[in-house]
Amino acid sequence: MNTTTAVNPAPAAGPMAADSVALNPTAVLRDGQVRYRVAAPDRTRSLAVTATATVRTLVAFSALGPADRDRLTAALAHRLGPDRAEAAVVAGLGSGLLLGHPADALPVADPAPARRHVLDAPPEGYAEAFADLAALLPLLGLLDRGHDIRALLTVAFIDRHGSGGTASLVDCAADLLTVVHRRSGMLDADGAEEFGPADGSLAVLLAARATATADLAARLSGAAPGPVPELPARFRQPDGGYQLLTAPQDGSLVLLGAGTAGEAADPAPYRWYEARLSHRPDTDTLTVTDQDGRPLTVPCPPARPAWQLPAPIQIAAWLSGATRLRIDLPAQRPEQPRLGRILLGPAAPAAEPWLIDCGGRPR
Image 1 (cartoon, rainbow, N blue to C red):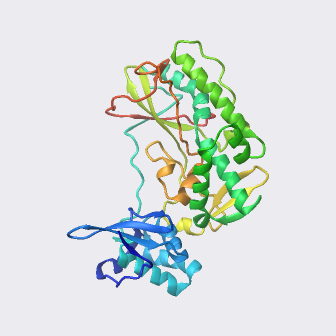
Image 2: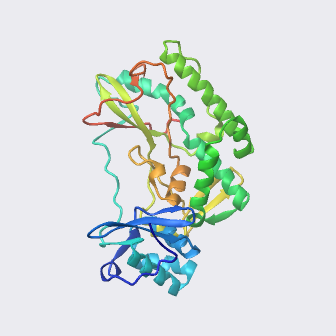
Image 3: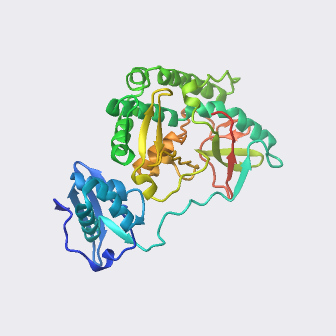
C-alpha cells in the first residue's frame, strides 16, 4: 500500500472543475488512517492518509453524499477556516479521496416496489394472510433491534455530553455508532443494566424478547400460541408503524423485511452540515434538528436499511424509528416455517413484491 501522511498532491485539471464532490466510496477509516483506492488506466492504487483533524472533518462532511462544491467548502470553513477548507477540498480532489461529479449527480430517491398495499385493505384472496400479518405485529415489535440501538444511543450520548446536552451531529455520529456497535455485542441481562437507560427498560425488553422467541419456536413446532409480552412503553416511540416487504404466494405472504414510512427530510447534504443532536431529559430521548431547530427525520423503507447510510443520517434514521428485524428461528424447523399464512425465512424471488403499510398500528 502506498501510504501518505497528508493529502497534498499536485492539483489535477479534471476534478478541480467539478460542480459537485463526494467522498471516494472505497474510503474507510481504520487504525488512524483513511484508506481508499484510486483507479488508474493501468492499475488500481491503494492509498492511505493519516486521519488528522482536518482529514476527519473533510471525510465526515463529504460522506454525507454528493454536494455542491462551494457549499461543502463553506461548511468546512466554519470548522477549519476559509483557507484550510479550500485547501482540503482541492487536495482531496487531487488525491482521489474526493471525487468530482457533474451537477446533476445528487442523490435520488430509491425506487419503491411496484405494488403497495395497506394492511387494513387486503387484496382479493389475501384477507386471511393480512389478518395473520396484523396479529404478528406485536411479536415483530419485540424482535426489532432498532429499539436496542435507540436506547444504547441515548446512554452513549449522555455519557459524552451529559443529560440535556447538545452536540454537532456530524462531529459525534461516528463515535456514537462505534460505541453502540461495541455495546450491542455485550447485551445480556447485565449488559442491559450497565449500558441501557436508567429506567431498566432495556433489560425488560430483552427478557420479553427471550420469552417471545421461545414461544415462536414452540408455535413452529405445532404448539398453541401463548400471549405476546408487552413492549415496554419507552419503545413504543416514535409513533408510526412498520412497512413490511412481502412476497405473495398462493394466498400466503412470505415476510422478506421490515422498514418505516414517513415524510423524509430534504436529502441534500447541506441540510445536515449544521445538524444538532440533543438530549431531552423530560422524555430521556434524543432528537436531531437542523440549524433552525426543525426536526430532521429519515424514514427507512425495507429496501434501504439504516446501517447503509452515512453515520449522521444513520443516527437520524434510527431516531426516526428505523428497524432492524431479526427473527431467531430454531435450528430444527420446517424447511419453510410458517405462522398461519405468514411464511418466514428465505423464499423464491417474487416477480412483484408487495410493500404493506401498517399505518399507525403500534409496533
